[in-house]
Image (tube, rainbow, N blue to C red; front, side):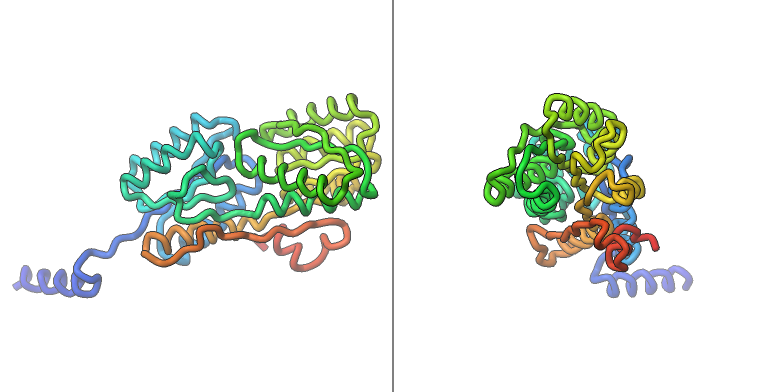
Length: 314
């Protein structure tokens, strides 16, 4: 009798789940890193979406954004656990593409975020429109220097799509709209604040007439700001940064940098997990999900909407 009751319960469960046991989806995240506040906020967004959707997620990334081999190993380890899907931010658009193809061949859905891969396989790419964000930074810096002068770019990791596109958007905008602005060759800092500081010091010494600098991510912005501050050129060399941390906000309030482009990191993570879940469920997913950015300066930093964007925990 007991066995018949158990069988009846099992049969009912099969009917209610469409003939199969219900399964909790596993959607891990392989990030470019975790050391920057940006990725910690992305992680918050992925966890919020996972909780809302009733799926399981995790978050891994190399210790340094130059560690492409380490990220490849992390992705291979993640695939070996046979997840239902993977949310990936690629350190190198070419180096990670073959692994995305491998994941696809194993039936693992992939959505990319922040920095994509050179492949059509990912169901979606969730990110800032980095070209447009670079153009916004160009407009801001041009306004600060009066539309004329020599400017430099301290970018993060060469080969990363976000660094390439943020630089290209900036250069193109300056060339087309501000012909009296000369843009120096891009310098790469690997997103390391110390390297960015050293590159900035060299740039300033080699170009005493330097009018401004654009930094393309959190680590680069911090390094350039530290250099500007320590060299005593605050206000003389204008700085537009990227990403908003407490330290970067502090540099803005101190007048070391004039503004920064901030991404909605929480929404990038949140929408990434949602897109991955939808793709696995057979729903139509936009190939590119553009998460808008905001330019922050002393004129708007105390606005409630900006405050919410900078401090999504609150």
